[in-house]
Image 1 (spheres, rainbow, N blue to C red):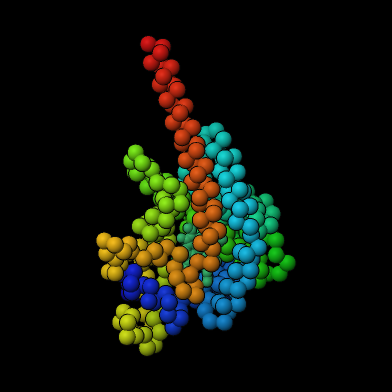
Image 2: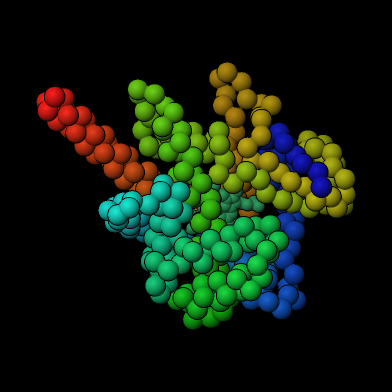
Length: 294
Ligand code: HEM
């Protein structure tokens, strides 16, 4: 395994279609392994292109404003619960539920724990509890609204892809906000800075082609498994030029849903900020009452 750290090198590799993704096993017998083999993320060539086009048309069917309203409303409802859930829980549950609702899944509220069950193994291919992963996969596929199996797998892929990445973006943005001092940034700027400086998806993988030593790209061994850091340094950055943002990947395999991710994240962060501001006012009132009572 070779790790490529500099964003300038990573950007060149992501833009080069000769670098393929490690493929899932198309002959795999278990539901979870089959699901990995049926999505776009772990396929190459014409199969990837066709699945990607289908995903793009599914995503185009979602109205961003409606997605944002759903995410905001789910966040408000979650924050009314006693005891209030953690930011991490809200950040991971709301994106999957909101997308599930917009995509027509049945019982969308039940989907986040199922996505959580397979999210790690989905990206790494390493399953720790195969039976639990299979059960979660089957339940996700059963809840999908598609009329055919290929569409169901792609719809479930959207939920699983959204789960950890959007959750991490919201969580890291809230941490950044807490550390931001007396002049907190606007939510959109906060999220843009988080994506640039603290990539929610820290790395992805590619396999080097047979003749990969290009004129401008890094020199890597033929057939090597490459880990591409999306959060490394950028040798082209200067005082006037910030590092490239690679959080959504790049090229023909880059995230097809950055606008969806941002619509959801803005909605959640705004609601969390409002709730914090209300709690702050509440605390201030209590302190005032305390002072008056003395
Ligand atoms: C902040 C949130 C998100 C981040 C940082 C993120 C990041 C990424 C990255 C880096 C990749 C490319 C991986 C690679 O090149 O190997 C990717 C792919 C993908 N993402 Fe996202 N993503 C986010 C949210 C979402 C959401 C909300 C959805 C669905 C609505 C989604 C759907 C996908 C899909 C389907 C792919 C695979 C594309 C393909 O196979 O061509 N992502 N994402």
